[in-house]
Length: 249
Picture 1: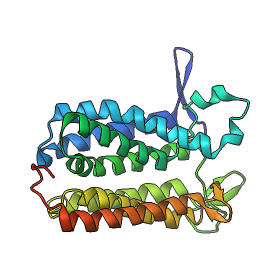
Picture 2 (picture 1 turned 120 degrees about the vertical axis):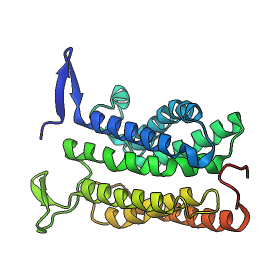
Picture 3 (picture 1 turned 90 degrees about the vertical axis):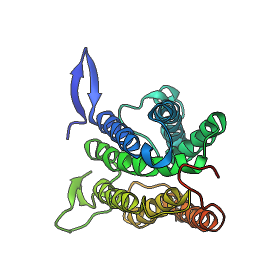
């Protein structure tokens, strides 16, 4: 599998970057379609995207570099080379939350409404972006003889990227379905944290190229934390945060 899609003016354009970009565009499109439910204008959404996307990218890269410092020690220039992959989605989630907190504070709009608006946009972007791992032949699983196994790194393995992409699509469909039913601001965002992290926890169990903290898989530890945060937010917002979607909380 050639990770390079084509060359443009002598520069290699990687499939990884293309898929990440397509995921971002799809996320913005979904976000635009959802503005009518939350009383947030398209201009405000675009302004947030211009701030949040680079913030999230920096945080995803920072998380990957910190977790894999042995790959960059003595080669610090490679830290800035994103064309061949190397992004950690959990860092992006944290970066997105930080960007949302800052933006809503400055613009004086509801954090929870913006988070609810963006949650399905984020998960659809993740579903598409995961295919970048396919072209890079990374984020693969342990060997298996299942009929859908893919030949990666000398063996037939679980296609982790495919599992997560399909799971994310299911979470996306669920979030869209409950959008009109959820009465508590922050509820959609909380369900995103729970839904994504639940799938990630189980998928991480068959991943081969994973980071360990002692005997624990780092991805599973972070997933458990995010599930707990999501459950706490869902309980708190349903108990104390009920509001009209276009109101303030």
